[in-house]
Length: 121
Image 1 (cartoon, rainbow, N blue to C red):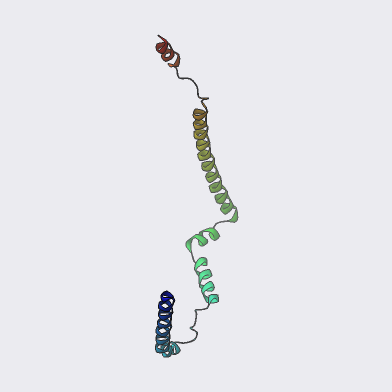
Image 2 (tube, helix red, strand yellow):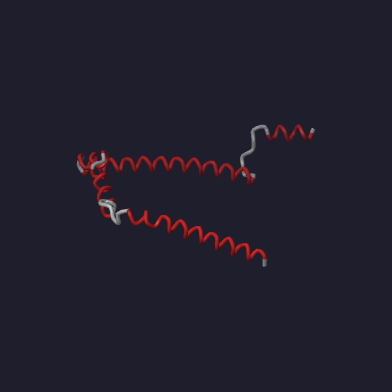
């Protein structure tokens, strides 16, 4: 019961404090202009597109012929695919070795029979 009273008291004080600051700052908020020039999302998109058009990468792509651009993209894609294939092969090889060792299917060591004979004698 006392907890509900304390919580209600804190809630009332919080609302009173919020209203105090809202009333105090309301005239300041009214002095701000309602809409600034150039701050709409449409203008932001236009600025972004203009920046992309002026970028060095886009100028490089548009200055070369489309055939050269396609060749460059395909060669870089091929290189990335080859690197990925190589790395995948290494990972698979490691996984196969680990699974063989776990299952006991790994090859015998060269000195296995000698160790076995020494244990018997």
